[in-house]
Image (tube, rainbow, N blue to C red; front, side):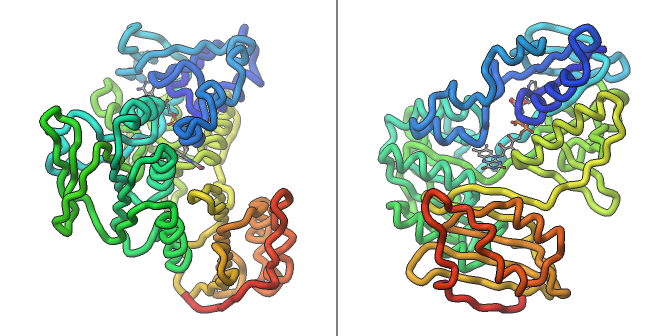
Length: 426
Ligand SMILES: Cc1cc2nc3c(=O)[nH]c(=O)nc-3n(C[C@H](O)[C@H](O)[C@H](O)COP(=O)(O)OP(=O)(O)OC[C@H]3O[C@@H](n4cnc5c(N)ncnc54)[C@H](O)[C@@H]3O)c2cc1C
């Protein structure tokens, strides 16, 4: 049986390992194809390479021999066609290959808007999503004194932090009235905004990019915002989100059904025979809703389950209680469950440490059962918070035991009893 996997990100590699766990090389040949890098790397750590804190090689979670030891063939090429009727794919450089089972784990690509001036600008506009983006950022940084970053989300903050690390003056354009309403409530959003500004960043809330102005050599020279102001910059970072990489599929011989992502059922099968999809690129049908999940932990889980499904196991994906962790420059962030999009009638307990950038938000539903946590400025064990959500614990119960979920062993725990708190309905 020939298992072919397009994409060497976490979803693709987890699927490959899962298949190999079951079948040896005599029963299954496994090929992983990617046009980005020879070896799987941790996309979430790109910023640490940009800030010289990790070597590129250190971004690779597995030693390079791991693939050979497991007889997983790695191919550096781009898949340009899929013919599911013929069970074959076409590679840009190396022609046609047959498959028995195919996994599309092709990830997501940066969103882009064709603002006026973008087409005329040949250089200086960057994203921070792929290894090639990192190359571009590094190439441009040493000739950059001023940069503008557009997009107040997690990747935007990372790009801002990297540029500040290299001594670049940064203007940060955030369309929303406070920082990242998709993940934070106003109090936390405003705290993060002030924190970013305290690192010497010119944070512009409610301001949008209007036009890109190239210089005579074609490199970006300035931008204007929707207020009409012109801001000089030699780099323009666009971080307005990512979108599943489906556009290339339209022109294939047998395109799989796509909406926001590649449509899959809960066993990660597409509408094409013997073709699966997993990770950031897929849109999963849960019957009453469909979901696109573009985070590391879900892609990892999708990959494992898709691998099992390709082996013929009976798989039904149940999304775990949502969890993510990140950092806004120096501020730790853990989120679990439903927070920013909590249903009407939910109640929120908001706690803040006086004079410090430490907050906790707990959300309960109308039945007083906890449904979400947003914890900033200290570290938390998400597995405990997830468990409390699964157990539908009431607010008072959770508040009394909150210290059990604190994780600041190295730095000392936050003295929770010193926090101000208020409860209100959302
Ligand atoms: C800067 C940054 C920071 C992030 N931080 C976090 C974080 O803190 N926490 C978190 O949970 N998530 C984070 N994420 C998201 C997380 O990295 C992704 O959800 C995860 O990497 C998705 O994995 P994947 O395997 O689905 O796809 P990807 O890792 O995108 O891999 C897909 C691969 O397929 C290749 N490919 C695509 N099309 C083709 C083709 N036609 N032929 C050959 N190869 C192809 C691509 O080049 C790519 O290498 C971050 C993402 C970025 C960009």
